Image (tube, each protein chain N blue to C red):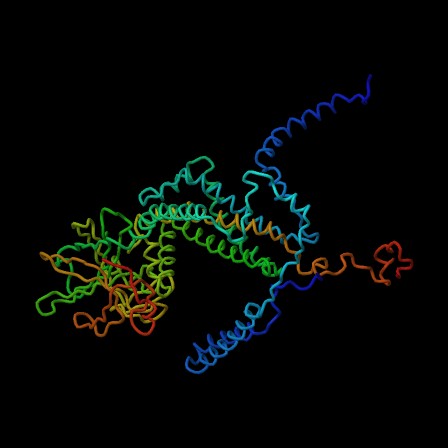
Amino acid sequence: MTPGPPEHGPAPTLWPLGFAVGIAVALVGLIVDPEWIASIGAGIAIVFGFLWARDATGEMRRHVPTVTAEVREATPAEIAAAQPAAGEAAMAAQQPGERFARSRFLEGATLGLGGLIGGIVTVPVAGFALLPAFLGQKGHKVDMGPLTAFPVGKWFIATFTVDPAEGEVSRRTAFVRNNGDLGTTPSFTIISNRCAHLGCPVQANGPTGAILGEKNVIEHTANGEILMRPVVPAGFGCPCHGGQYDTEGNRTAGPPVRALDRYSFEIDKGHLILLSTYSVSHVVGTGAQAKIYKYKVAGPGEHVDGPEQWFYPLQPPHH
Amino acid sequence: MATRRPQTRAQVRREQMLAAANYPLDWLEERSGLVGGVRYFLFRKVPSDTNWMQTLGSATLTAFVVQVVTGVILAMYYKPSPHDAYSSIQNITDHVTMGWLVRGMHKWGASVFIILMFLHMGRVFLFGAYKYPRELNWIVGVLLLVLGLTAGFTGYLLPWDQTAYWASVVGINLNGTAPFLGPWLAQFLRAGQEINGNTLSLFYSLHMLIIPAGIISLITLHLYLVIRLGVTSPPWSRDAAGREVAEEPSPLRAGLTRPVPHGSPGGRD
């Protein structure tokens, strides 16, 4: 054998370069001109990708010659020397590929029983590792205190513990405004402070507390202490990546993909009770007259409307 | 009667010491072959023109070993519950003897580990050491990089302070924006719909049991492949290119900057 180039080393090829150019053009096109330039880029990428794949698999598809080993007859002396006289060693040698029923059975039994035992152990453990995050998620009700604590038209930054048993880690903040009565039922705007970008705590853009000459209110309810700080917000802003929202929670600037989530609520024995949150694509109008485009609650950064919503077809179970 | 030269007392003692040191090694080798294995691992052949850059891999391994050792010690004092996590970190830093040092080594060592992984990856890329037949080792290395970054991410939550909490909120939600399975991954990482006490224990378990086990297994595979396939020569290696190893000095320079080679009078052949 003469030393040559290694068989696996494919010849240098320019196809990946064309493929990369196509991808680059498609990406630039997505920003510049999604219809034409992006399609042209995708076309280039597909053509060169096909050529590259054809080139790379050429070795596989080419005919490979079969090589037969060179053999010679054994001399009688060699046969005699190779033939043991008696015992197990004298048995005929196993032919290549020949299997005995017993060894087949033992192999199957070992693999089958091993697989069964492994499965019996693994399935419950894997279930325990993965399922608790998705099953039995409980909703919580938060008692925010009597309606009289919320004068009509005033904003409060309300901080509360969703589940007192869980403690500090379940502390949440909402921006609450009493819109006055809508017909016979009170109307509230209750905006979650979870940013619709990546979930940082959104802050009210405006003076609070001492600057307004007003005192913080602390309500004592079934959920422990509810801290309510009066505020006059011009909007809401996120400190992490600069997302900005108006007072209805509509996105006005920055990276968020939708409006701020809201809390649904009920009035029970004259108390304002917060229920679960829902997601909002946008809000038209303000206060009690606002038309809220509601969606099932989605994680921060997930689109709820537009073509991008198809990226999130299946939401994990919520309460 | 004396057939051998008399040995000095020191020589006799040295031979006795050598026999005493070799005895347990021979005992072990005869029953396990481990001594030969270690010898095979440590004293294997490498190209003559390897480079200091090729020590970055073992530097990364050393950084990982430091993380394992300091992490094991920190686990003796850290309490992964929402009520105790932060105060136990304070305790380690302020009260446990040398706790500040071990925690500092673990904290800064994490960055060192990540940086060294990237430098090692850059070296492998620029040397072309990922090419046939070492493609699989590159893939294993990429998996190690992913696991290393995941270890950093899960470890960041453990101090359970505001930085840790909000960094994890943002990190988990970033995972959540991945198409299709993102929301499911995020809910798994959160151990529920919202971050809660179980998130902390989940991250602790991932950080100190599952991810290190994965990293150690993959490092074993990584090293096995290094030993099986050998170390690559640098791209400028004349040896690997099949050219002559020793460059013949040019006739003009011979004798000026270097001694004239033997057997080539006047610097000409």
